Length: 325
Image (cartoon, rainbow, N blue to C red):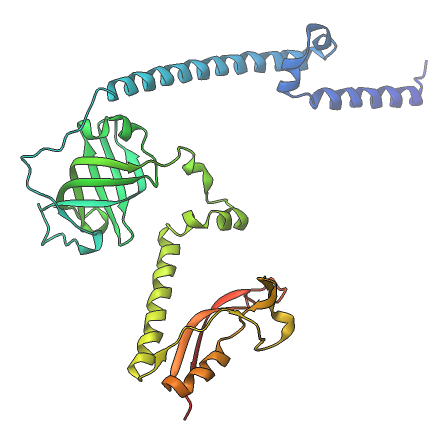
């Protein structure tokens, strides 16, 4: 007897639909199913998911055991750390308080110094050796803390950006940044930092996150270098004008007159009167010419142009000068 092609096509379509539906069932879906629902699945698919479920449970149980073991180890470590109290040895030579930029690996080798700053980076080598990359705003220096120094409660709970005071001797080390490192003999935690600081900024952070956490971004080497370069460039401009006998003036940035186009003014209510953020200090410099002669200023200016291009800034520092004759 010949088969009905319409019947065969319908059966094939139904089977394909069931295969697609069962294939779409994830392990998470399978774990939530009761036995009655599982029994409706094709045998081969049910066996495969059951095998994955067993492996998943074993993995979760192992992870739970490891977490409990880590928690117990941390608790024991913290309990032991609470019994360790650091004391500054009075028999050691007095330490000279210095900035990192003032250190020289040859001149200061074996000299005992006191450095204060922030933990830029932190890494452990086992439980009795810790390396701190100290940042004090003038440079970076690696510090080594060993034995009891890194087994206290403060050391175990130390995070990046915590502020610390470190006592120790300078030693040459070609592998370290700056060709030297600090071997600590005592240290103090000045101010702790939150434990979640590592997750605030990552390499994948978008511009909004970076701008909202700008106070952390500028602590990086690239951003801090830009701040230093801006300071140097500004100083060069000032020296240029001072060398030519100019006087630096400081005009106000809250004004009641416009200098350029009125459409680019930032308006504000100044105690009931209309005022603006300055677009330029040129007019004030012109009034200062008869009093001091050649003059200049380096002050912020503001433009209320609605644009998001890099060539349009709402706020910038304006270098302006006026020479009367």
